[in-house]
Amino acid sequence: MQLGDTLNISIDDIAQGGDGVGRMDDGRVVFVPRCLPGERVEGKITEIRDNFLRCELVDILEPSPVRREPECPHFSECGGCQFWHTDYQQELDFKTGAAMEALRRISAIEEWPEPTIVEAPETTRYRTRATFHRRPRDGDDGRGIGFFAPGTNRLVEVEDCPITRESVCRARRDVEDGLQDLGDVDIMVESASEDASVITIRVDELPGEPPEPLVDFASRLGDIDSIRGLRIVGGDRVWEEGDCTVDGDQILAELPIESLRMPAGLFRQSNRAANERLVEVVAESVQQGGGGTVLELFSGAGNLSFAMVDEADALLGFEVDERAVELANTIAMFAGIDTWMFREADLADGFHEALKPEEHGIFDQIVMDPARGGAPDVSREIASLQQEVSPDRITYVSCDPPALGRDLAVMAEGGWKPVGLTMLDMFPRTAHLEVVAVLERSAE
Ligand SMILES: C[S@@+](CC[C@H](N)C(=O)[O-])C[C@H]1O[C@@H](n2cnc3c(N)ncnc32)[C@H](O)[C@@H]1O
Image (cartoon, rainbow, N blue to C red; front, side, top):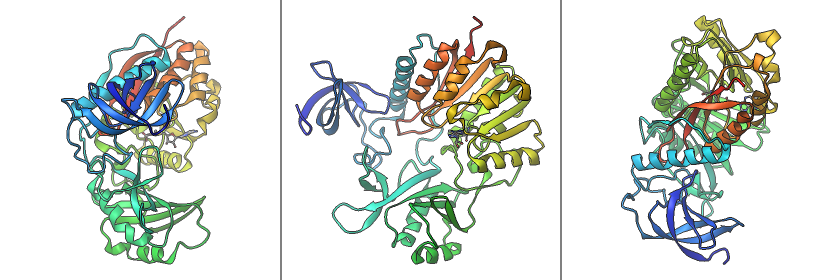
């Protein structure tokens, strides 16, 4: 058996990540994208490992009764989505089942509470931020704009992405003219209001002024309704034209002050309606934990923090992005929330500084929401905290169930156990799922 060979395979399950799973006669697992349990498919081998193979889908030989015609014309090529080939309820069952399996297997924790499943309020046009790539087109000398094919840097040209807000797709189309003289660039489009976006173009270096056609394009922004501002970021230099601020409600689920404008380029949850549910779940958990003082790790610009103002007495947030920290402190100050404070800290090596009891007292609860890779060092420190300085409860928000499973395996060594679990779909049609795990520490 070698790369490029084709296999006929029966699909039994869906794996974390969205691929269909089959099994070879020799026991090896086979992953095939865009297929469903119960299907027989033909796949072409693209990767061979000791205990698994990966295939690309060549043909569906026996389709599942729950297979649907994809509503997105790019689904067969684009790496952005994994679930246009079945209806939403099926997708949710597959995703939550795969996430639960990954959590159990990776954490090796046997006892789990029944998960609460929160479906997405909208399954299309929900995404308020998308990063498009400008790359050479296959078969001609020009460049196009779109997303990548799965696992490659091969361009799939996309003008209109059905999970992305129409206004964001419009801004992507409108900026195309200004990019004619640029090479390979990444174009992040984020909604700044219901109708307009701010565009950030990432280049390798920005030695002087941006290229003339782009400066010319930027000078015409006043006539282009879909684009509020244009930023070019190269290394640590930023060039901005137009209004590069974003309405606060595009980033924060709860606005402590009205008419808030925030700088573009900050982290944001890219599904606003689902984000409102997420912050409710977190605030409810903090309330059920008795409120008190909260240590928030990876606090961003305060999306979770400002949603738990009524549930806790005081909050100290730690975050690496200096701009987000400054902004969160300014918001707290103007809103008169004087027991909410944010500090800049790199938590990559843990958070011992954050937990000095002599400086901050002992926190009642931790809320944490790390980036996709999870928080291995923080988890190790949490596991080794002496009981007398340890918070009683952790509300852990994760956008990657395998990373959460790894961190919980570590925390379990320190006696932390899951007592609550919510799976919240912030990313319909993709294999991604947001998980909120609530942990408590057993007394022994
Ligand atoms: C998933 S976001 C969550 C932010 C916030 N909870 C929200 O809902 O907007 C993760 C945050 O972790 C921050 N971050 C990433 N690496 C970090 C590190 N090493 N130390 C501290 N913060 C970090 C990012 O800047 C980002 O704001």
